[in-house]
Length: 108
Image (cartoon, rainbow, N blue to C red):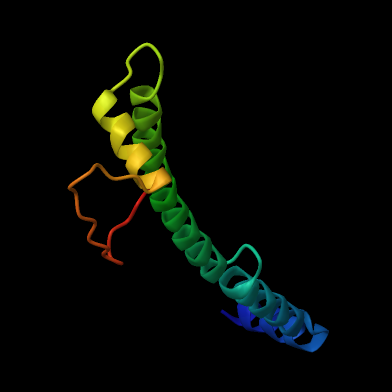
């Protein structure tokens, strides 16, 4: 026990404990708030989750658009869809039809 106290006193006098304490504090703060710390990890984890949701939404949108393009291709021309698109894009109507404008309708 006496030897341990003697070694502790020598370390205190040499300033090793002070330097060790300062370095420990520095590394702990950087582990929490640094560029590669816990807060940054949580922030980036949230960004990855948001980007994954965006990716899923864009993939769904892409599949929908590919389906619409396939309906207009020469191999499988859907005449009803072609007529619907012509009416929307060219603002055409048949005789005897009435057009009701609604601002809430999304014309893709």
